[in-house]
Length: 165
Image (cartoon, rainbow, N blue to C red; front, side, top):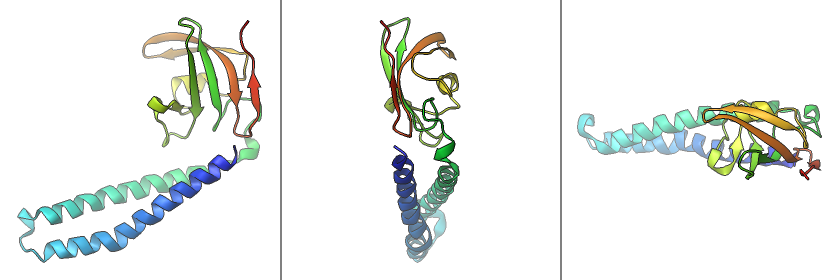
């Protein structure tokens, strides 16, 4: 699982390289070509190129921050038997009896529809440093919920599972 961080770093680096090339080479060419069309006030190609330039610049900044955060993660400091960054967690909602699978990711990777949450979220805060077999209370916008941690798989590959009888 610790290779997951290296894989993410490589994916971010690849996207960053492509966007930097686009920002430095391709977009200036498009802007230059659009300028050749004349009046910039009514030049859709110029406006589109400038909008793309702003988007790419913002994305480069976002990816640079994400890469910096990934580089700061010291896997050796993450506990092998507790929920933390990179953990996959199976929860049992004690009220509804439904199971939910979550993965703890960085704030830039959050995607709740895919079950990816950060430690800064209400559920992430409640799960941080917990292990399988524990019950956590979570204050979420919909109210208070209680979850039983059935299983965790940490970034180290350690798997702990304690199902309720």
